[in-house]
Image 1 (cartoon, one colour):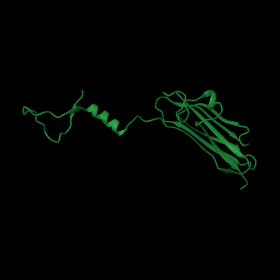
Image 2 (spheres, helix red, strand yellow):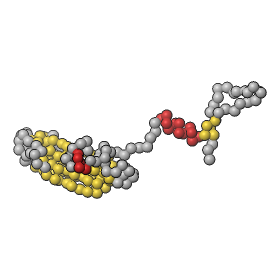
Image 3 (tube, helix red, strand yellow):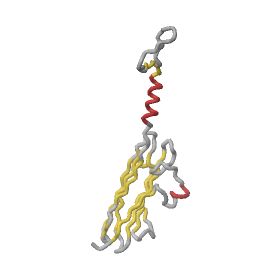
Image 4 (cartoon, helix red, strand yellow):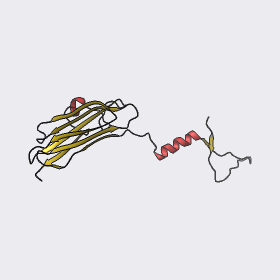
Length: 170
């Protein structure tokens, strides 16, 4: 049932016959719709997170621990389909797979542990996460559709996170 809401009038109007002219009234549902439009209230968006934390410096041959975290707060069945982590100790010439996990749920944390290379090299870590099961299909951490044969295959694009640890004598 819709109940009318009477809007206040600064003065009472009187028609030509002397009869009172009723004030304008609007259904509550219209007022609520107008309020939502004016205040900009919208449905909440899905938040997808991919974080990669690694040290900035390491000694040659020392152990490097890089922590990788991924999540989605989607309520429409979205989950982490692929959680891939690779590392390189030779400035990215070669890559070693650390994790190639599938169907890990809505939240996952992994620690990539490996030895630093020689002085002057960079120890690199890269991660890519694909989300599936939500209303938007297969997406990256930014909610963009995944180009499986393009940016995904070549570890490119905004959905890939990376870190660089400089290997130096302390």
